Length: 249
Image 1 (cartoon, rainbow, N blue to C red):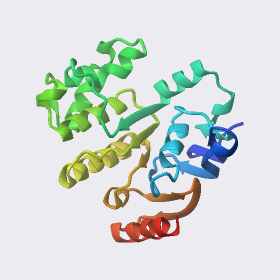
Image 2: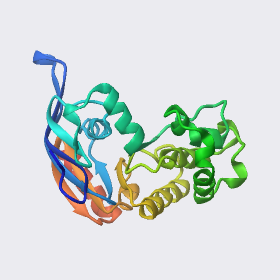
Image 3: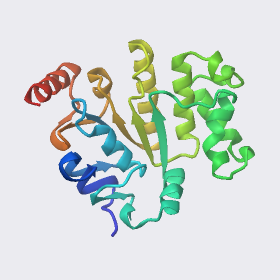
C-alpha cells in the first residue's frame, strides 16, 4: 500500500507484546502516528512508556506484534529480514547515546563505515566525507581515533556517520544523554541544521525537556500509548507534562 504524499513514516494500530500469558508485557498499545518529511520529532515519556521500543520498530530493528509501519510508501510487514536490512542501509541513519564508534578506526573511517558495510568504495564518498566533516567541525580531527576525541566530538562523528549515505530518516536514541548541556545543545543544533540542509526526518527519543524543545513536535507516551502531542513547546511546558504523566502512572 502506498503511503500518503509527504509522509516519511507512519504507524497504524502498532502494538508490541513481550512474553506470553500472565508475564506478558505490553510495550506498545495501538499506536497510530504520522511523521511528515523533514519533521524533527521528539518522543518522550516516563521510564517504561515504550519510547525506545517505538523507535526500534520505526527503525526496522524490531517487529511489532500487530499493526504496521510504512516507511516512504513501503509496508515493512511484508519485507523479509534481508529486505529490512537493505531498507535500513539505504534509507535510515542511526545515532545512539553511546556513539558505538569502532575504537581502532579514525574519525573519517568511522564515518565511512556504513558505506563500506554496504559494499561501496570509499572513493565514491570523498566529496561527501569532506562536506560532512566540515559540517560537524571535525576536518582537523579526521585522522584521530575515538580515544583521542572528546565526548561531543565522538557524537559528532556518529552524526556524520548517520548522514554519510544521505538517508531519508535519522533515528536518534538519547543522542545527548552522555553530554554536558552546552555540548548537547551544539549536537542538537547540528542535527537540526543538517536535517534542514538535507531535507531529512529526525525521530529522537529523549528524556531531556531542553533537548525535546528543539524539535518541531513532541509526542508523549505513557504505558505504551500516545497520550499527548505538542507543537514547538518550551522546556517548562514539556517538564510539566512529563511530571503529570509520571504522577498519573
